[in-house]
Structures are given as structure tokens and as C-alpha cells.
Length: 143
Image (cartoon, rainbow, N blue to C red):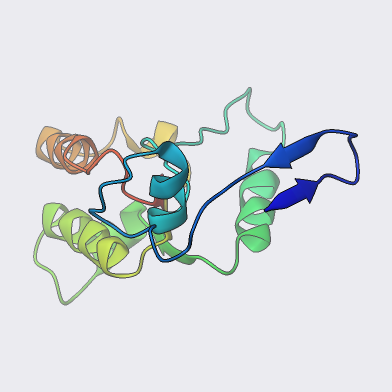
């Protein structure tokens, strides 16, 4: 195929037969991999930080609104301690990430983590860190 970008005067020649591009195929090229599985990601993370009162409470919900086509899972103390169906906050964390795995691509939103991190028990911190670090690097979940 011969594609020409409207913004540039550069010709791009790409010769890919759609029948040859398949997962596990012998092509091995990066283009084939991207066409078969989508663009690669590596532990997608986003941290909104700054001094108090600089609008983080407004930016994060606005960003989530722009990403409304993704499944969003909120992990905050009210969810961790208030979920009647689960016994412990650790179970709530594991449950949240399990549901995020089922609904990929997804977003796990941790609002005001700087405020509640000091208040929760060490077992909650260890559980959260182990679940986050244990995710597959290409897992399409924004944290």
C-alpha cells in the first residue's frame, strides 16, 4: 500500500498482507505485532500532584470524564472500609483489581492517596503494592 500523509510530503510504503498477520505467526515484525495485538503499553500510570488547592480535585474528574469509554474503578477508604460484601480492606483491593482485569481496558482511580496512605494499616499498603507490582507489564489498566 502506498499511504501519503496530508500534513507531510512523505510517502510511506507498507507491504503487509492481512492474511499473514496473526498472533503467534512467523512474521515477527513490530508492525505485525501491533496490528495483531494493538499498540504496546508498559505499566500505564498517571499521578496528578501539586500543592493543596491547585485544582487536583477538578482535574482528575475532568480527565475521567474525557476517558468515559473506559471502565473506572474507584479505590478509596469509603470503598475499602464500607463495602458490606467484603470483610477486609485487603479483600476490597484485590476485588477491585480483579474486576479491572475482567473489564479491560480499564482505569483504577485512587483519589487523594496522599491523604489516606498514612491512615491505613501496613497490611493494606502491602496488599495494594503487591497487586500493583504483580500486574502484567502490558496490562491495559491505567492506574
